[in-house]
Image (tube, rainbow, N blue to C red; front, side):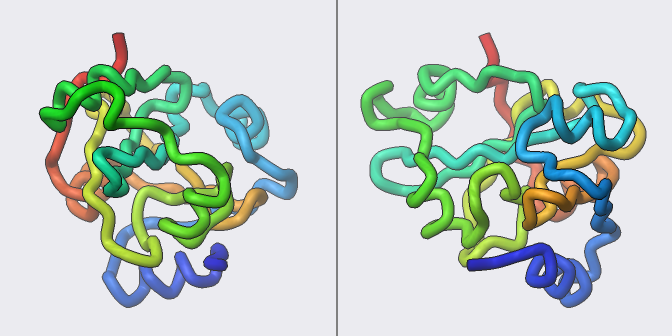
Length: 157
């Protein structure tokens, strides 16, 4: 299983301009993370793993967004029934991280990643999973886009 230490090593090796923040309390949800950091929930991003036609796809979305499997299926050109949210054990098996701590990069394997369009409206520092339930990743939107790529879709109805 991967941890915040693995994420730090990945960021150093890949020269990613991001830092880990340790707020001193577990932050497994967007609300918990925002409260611990004293920021608006809109500044929190989440990395959600989907299985699309048997293959993993990571969606990075604004923390409070409800990602639509139907819209993701449409974006990927698949039937809705071919796309589903990955559950706990699958998330850990594919990303290496436990649910609630998954960062947008630094996984066991490179993952195709789609940014939900709402993320592109975020300004200032944004925060996502930091590899541990009590760690958060701090980075800019520009750096997130540089690292995960430019694939973007409207995935919230």
